[in-house]
Length: 116
Image 1 (cartoon, rainbow, N blue to C red):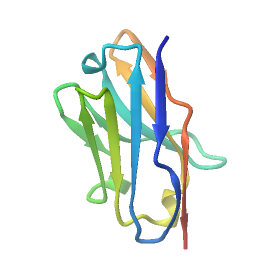
Image 2: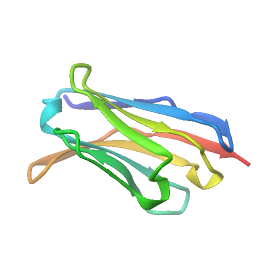
Image 3: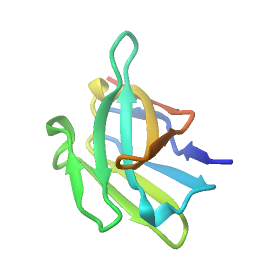
Image 4: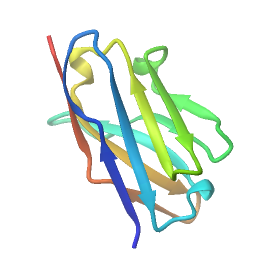
């Protein structure tokens, strides 16, 4: 059974930082591209950052220079370090494991709220 469990969300003031974690089980973790997505109320789910099994990263323009994605293959965990948070970063953040052309899985999401 595949599980992606996010943690680390919460309430933070503008300019603050949070670190999200996503622990994966039931998959061969280092075969998957891992990604963070977010969905604000009433909006679609958008990609925030991704990291391939080889460590190549990609970021949405809105978070470049503020967010950093990383992975620890030994711990089957992907992280999202979020700095200089803004109210517009408020959303539910989801972790996704993608094996291109094969399958993908989602976590249950973690709420991030940035107070102005």
